[in-house]
Length: 177
Image (cartoon, rainbow, N blue to C red; front, side):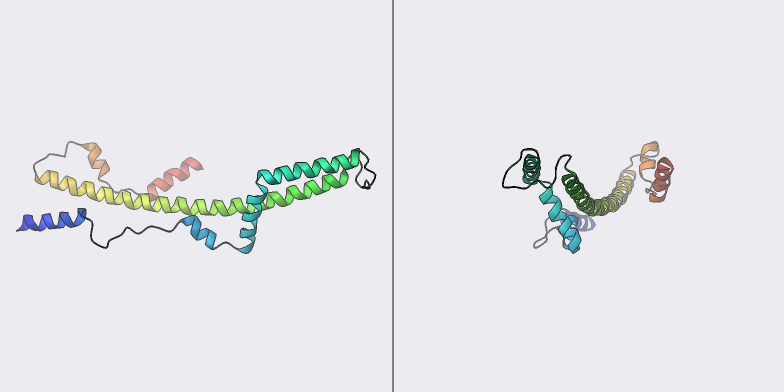
């Protein structure tokens, strides 16, 4: 009867239960996107717009027309920024400052998402490591009950020890600092 209970237990572990569906986690990026502030949304839109070939072509055309107007006299367009194009330099500098700020805002937000994703990965990896160690201990117990001598395997003994997050953290801090 005991063996029958074990088989029922094992079958329940490995068979799909009716109505059971794996929980699919919502994307970390999707959650972060939903929580964006107005300025972050605006920065993302601006970064994606300004980071396009269309914007590059528009800038090239604008600068070419500007230079053409001020180097080759056109009768119906007055020259207001003669060479060395001081006003154009001012406009381009301001454009560069504004664009770099938008890019930095988007990068900061992306960095926060990456940090959160990295922390989530770390926590999941630690949980998995603990679960694998537990499975190895269970396997070692079963092997010993069946007469397999594991005492001569130092690698296995080391693997059966739980991982110390604090110890790993201290080692990494020493390497970094």
